[in-house]
Image: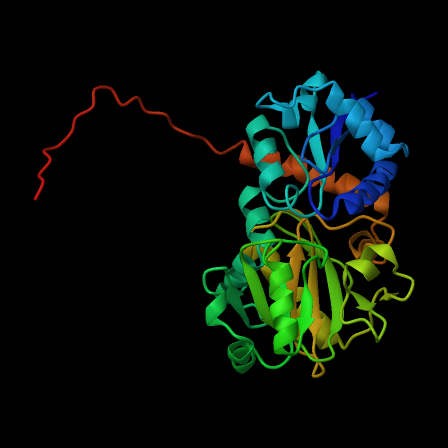
Length: 376
């Protein structure tokens, strides 16, 4: 019998999507083939400290998180410089990392940097692609450079906020605007605004989450469409899914994503005109390559009243909760949950092997020779 791959499943994190990550991790753990993989669990606390397998397993099994974390902290020297990741040292060997960390720490390139430093393969995009895709401002800059349609926006910072009154924003973007922190997920800090009072209140809240905030032109009566992408150099796209929120809700926010989705309708696959399906699929694949993503991504679109699609945002480590569309779109496209997570691991191994072919040259400098310095 072939030796099992030692997989470290990382979840939790110090973002607003901490509990979402825990739900995703349960589903991925259940889908992993235990005959092929030995799985160890590591949870990042809300403080960003990694717990060992034993403590993580206790939380995974339903023990109160706060109590388990307190017990674990009592045994740790949190003043040590490597305390946040010291728990990884308890395992003799790790073959592969499977991050299930949504939002900052997981999708912003941070955890990918750790994996690169440890020289281990992992699921998902590399440091740069993760960081660019997580920052809505950088994402839009790259999409615009690649000619991929997305909504116009204004970038706001604490330094330039006073230069952009509601009247100025309305003149540039219209009277329906969304305020979004540049680096935040799951609709946290996002507000739909239509007047000056809403605008100022939305900025006050959004700046709690980031120093970069987008004022983004709204799409009137949009249809929210999503697509799943899978692959490395030759990615493939799933069938499309659509989300229909209750009419009284302003948009697909955190509440109806994760707290109470009972009023949300998920259409899988969504029936759209073939030309529109083809256009969205092509835009998604172009964006995936332009952002240099690997492994997986869910890409969200807004389709206006005239069937014009706008790329809304990519998600490099999309949710795997019971209502998450990434795995569901693959299921209706013919790839089962278990096969999907298995493919993601294989893609991570392939990307690691590919990158290992890159060579580096080190040249000794010897004695330093400095040219003449002339000061005027």
